[in-house]
Length: 143
Image 1 (cartoon, rainbow, N blue to C red):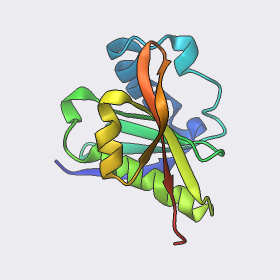
Image 2 (cartoon, rainbow, N blue to C red):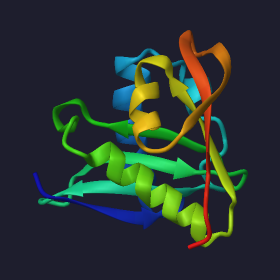
Image 3 (cartoon, one colour):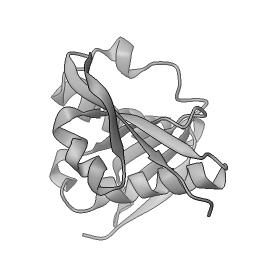
């Protein structure tokens, strides 16, 4: 399946970002809306994956702290490399901003995905939104 990843802002693509994250996190995973809409979107850099018809099918954000979060892909588009492409886009943005390290809170079932992308687990399991997570980080080399 062909797709593209674009860099965007919350102001520019709020509706599409909300749709993807509401579908994946709020509806599928039952994350409370108060936790999902945490007030950090306006200060974050966002990336959206678009299919050939320019429909938004996945997203991710990079916070100023270097945290990558809200990686989500609509169910019918999973396991096609979209998540990895989004993660790479966020990582490249962090590198362009001279960040030396990025980190994320991975759902435990996804830690191997992130390990395959060069992230390392730091610390034990903790619970966010009733979902077990592990903190993971990745050192970035200069571009």
